[in-house]
Image (tube, rainbow, N blue to C red; front, side, top):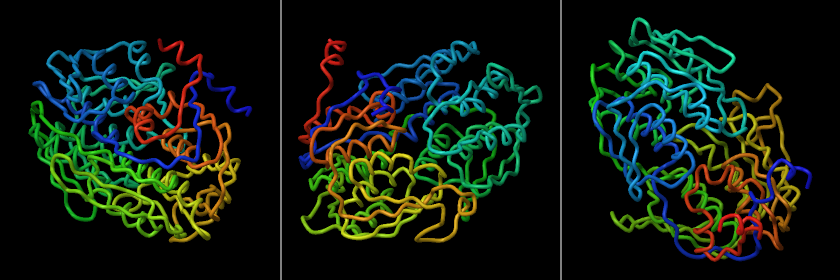
Length: 457
């Protein structure tokens, strides 16, 4: 496989497929909340405590960014202590060392402008899943009163006259842009009204954190959020909500491999849309709502899986990050399924690897199986037709991004034979805590190359 040339052989996992996953995994705090909660700690004048923090690379990246800005960060088990009382400016080179593969630095701008009067954004990384412009962020920051200067090394921001509340409407309910407005508006002078805001559970949990810190935030109907700026915020103590993306990934793995996985920590409320889809496909689940040991058990009931027509959407719709693992499961459904992606225009790149494994997937630029979306007339391959069931066979796979990468792991585990999956350290560790140990605990037959094991000793 020529594409593996771009990834070191050591960054590879060998998977011997064909074994159902059986057992239990534990999910901690949501990747899409924890990193933003860490940024929010910058706004406080006293220390913050964040619990249920997963051991993922995104946490390491934000930890580095906070430390170079003078924040004292300590991790004890899954509890993170952050003391921002001595926040200071960081050099361009220091920021670049930690921010190379993350898009988090853009969210530090509001808090740093409030605390220091200046901020810096390096060239942003992240997954290549379609356009993720920072125009929404910079436009909003300018309206708040920030001065934006683009330079060869990145973007420098200042706020010579402070930041002031605004009335702002997003063209699309972007999660990142909503987070930017929240983190900036809470200490801006006056009132901010944000329309067409994202209302994902992770956004609501971030609002809960900011409210604990002393913010005044009202969530109205019709995606309207009102923020009354305050002069000072204090630290917080908070337990992050569970990662619904990881929970759905393990659920899809159980279905695709004809196994049974109890996902301890998974919560029904934030996964209702996924649970409906899971049951519609033919999967079975059981909710245990015990406050300490609760979770959801997902399993394949032994009957044929059913085809469905689905489309991704912003919350409360089908989450775009649930799409890839669901598609792998749909390759085993009896008939034609449709997945219409409406959030990112380039999120089906991973299907080329699935097709090499024997999956029957065709991509279309039309809006199939649902209502027209903003990509419909722009010639993006944003609809997929999946014909099943397909007998998957082993292949060498190159991971293109985080969520697609886990779908490749699922496909390799469901396939016959031995696959080699490249890019696991580069991508999977960004959002899945101890994924190798969890796979082994579920009975997966996986191993690292001998050279990798030698290097780790």
